[in-house]
Length: 354
Image 1: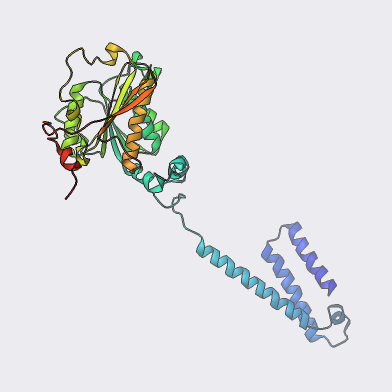
Image 2: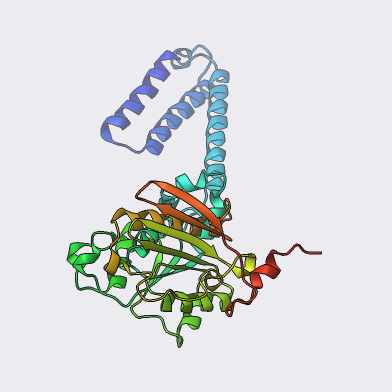
């Protein structure tokens, strides 16, 4: 029997050296096995060839049967693996996120308060940011990085050299360009999986309602009261939450105005624009560079919380940050029944239901 196994090894080795296909090598060994079995069955007992190959056909038949069993088992395994292998048409996993997005948002997804469902809500959300200046810059960049699916940015201004000390979404090469273009390019560079819509214009009564109707949430980082009151009125009319931030010198404030959920609107808290000179703009009074980054980031954080349902947002509260002395405080703000915009709707929503 040993000589047959040696010949089989030589057949296999010769096939390897010559590069013969595996199937051809197995065929050669199969022919050797068939010749040995035929010799055992045909030659008379005591023949030299028969004696040299074991003297009986039984062990060779058993060996052949075992080989067939192993080959059949391997064929079944290959077929089962082929049936179990998932079919991917695009090379990406099935579900709302690409593989690259799952890696990008991994630190969100492992947060208990956000998780996969919260990240899906961010991806499906549409957020409008009014103003691409000091407050809009950090808010836009963090909303983009967080994976908010569709972000609109409204601004009619162009980048000026004096903006660059605090409006970090723009660079020196952007001076003279529309802020919405510069902001959009920066946001797409941060996260190519989001959609950015740019509106290079100043919001007016003729278009504000139609524009806000396309979005779930509005962030207002403008520096003039005319636009603030206009956006607030449109948000109340459309039932959209409004996250509003403001700055002056070393101090900033943030609140979520949402009468539909028991909070006041902006005009409940600020019934009238201050007299000229009482609330100077940043260009008139100055502002420390990092302050918009702090306040704008808080606005983005409130937006993420509101969209995912995490924690408690600043509804009915105003957060005030004093950068000069490193202090924060919160004050309660309430709806007013005589508000000409929301007419105290927040009072009715906040009242306990019978």
